Length: 129
Image (cartoon, rainbow, N blue to C red; front, top):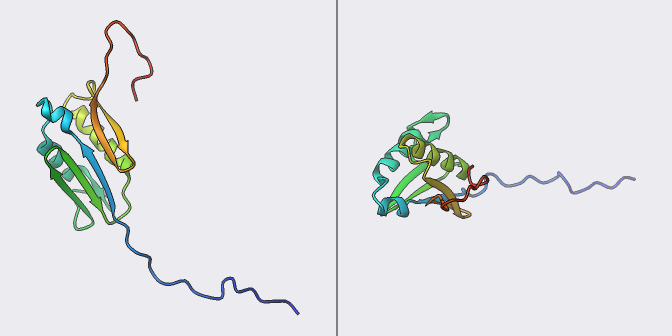
C-alpha cells in the first residue's frame, strides 16, 4: 500500500507582508561646491520615475523625500536600485556633469555622487563605466 506524502496537502496562507524598499542618493559633494541643485534633481526624479509603465505616476506606492543634500526613495512595490542609478546618470548627462561626477554605491541601499579622480600626467583606461 503506497504512503501518501504530506507535501501539497496543505495550503499556504494568503499574501505575505509588504516589503518597503528604501534607497538613498547622497549629493553632498557636488551641492557643497555649488555645481548641482538638489531641488532640480528631485523634480527630475519625480518626473522620470516610472510606476506601472507610466512616468510621473508615483502615487502612494513610491515616495521621494529630500533631507538637506540627500534624496531618499521609498517604495512599496518592487523597485530597482539600478534604475535609480540609471536616472541619476541621465540627470548628470543632461546637465553636462557626467564627465566630472560619477555615481558610486556607498552601501547596499544607497549611492553617493563623487568626483572622478584625475591624476596629472597619468592616463587611466579602466576608470569609465
